[in-house]
Image 1: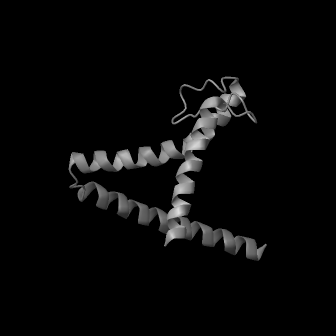
Image 2 (image 1 turned 30 degrees about the vertical axis):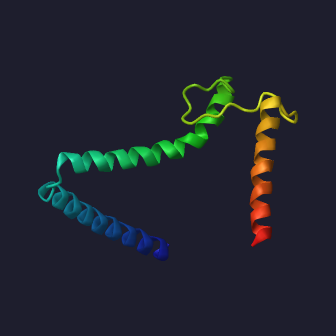
Length: 113
């Protein structure tokens, strides 16, 4: 019991010290707030972008849960899944052939060197 009571006393004193630190920080922010509105807006935008990026991965999962997937118009940068998985369409085949031609030309250039 003695150890528990000592630990509780330590927690109380630590909490009081933390509150004093927070009050000092808050007071300094209120007095020393000389940032312009543009700087605040830019910082706010950065925080919003970080938040949005964090939510982007979760958005698809939420759409799946509510049955809106794969027609997620609200999700940022949503890419519709392949409608023909495992089957190559003509457009995909032509793109693959173009990529092979480019790759082959690059390989020939390295062989000549």
